[in-house]
Each structure stands twice: as C-alpha cells, then as structure tokens.
Image (cartoon, rainbow, N blue to C red; front, top):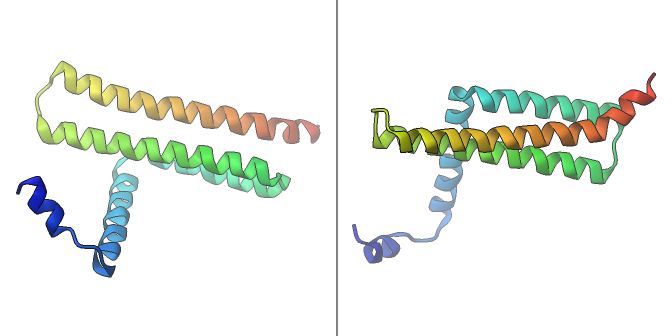
Length: 131
C-alpha cells in the first residue's frame, strides 16, 4: 500500500482510539512478560515509591522520581522494540545487528544507573538521618 492510500485509510474515531490503547497494553504485556530488565526496573520503581511514602518526600522529589522512572521504562520499551525488529530482520549473527541490540541495551543501562543515582540523592539523607 502506498503512503497516500495508507493516509486515506487512517480515519480518526473512537474505534481507532480504543485500538491504540489495546495495542499499547499488548506491548506492555509482551515486554513485562518477556524482558527481565523491565521487571528489575519495575521493582526498583516500587521500592522508590515505598520509600517516598515512608519518608513523605516533597512534590518536587516525587516529580523527579516519577519522571526518571518513566524515562527508564520508555527506554526499555524502545530497546525491546529494537531487539524485536532486529530479530525480525535476521536470525543470523551480524555485527550491525549486535551493535543495534547492544546500543539499545546500553541506553537502558545508562538510564537505570541515572535513576539509581537520583534515588540515592533523594533517599540517602533521609536514611542517614535515621542513624
């Protein structure tokens, strides 16, 4: 289907809106069911939420934690999409496929480290005050 016909076939409407939500949920189900790193990040996010509630952190600190958590989850979902696309294109080893997968993984790792550092900046003073 050429681009013009494809654009014409996309009509706006309530059915398309609900299908978009369904596809997003399907993507989340797949990713959380098949990607260990997403589970690890989700557990880290749950721990930060519990600590935030225990220490009654400020609105600004909540905002920073939520934004960093969403950034990490988004990057991990994009990494999952990259890996699936590479696997669709080839099932053989190829150096460029390895680079694509490794760079996607590295993006998730960098974001995860950033999130951990942010959580440490926020929670270490509260934990230190307990001693």
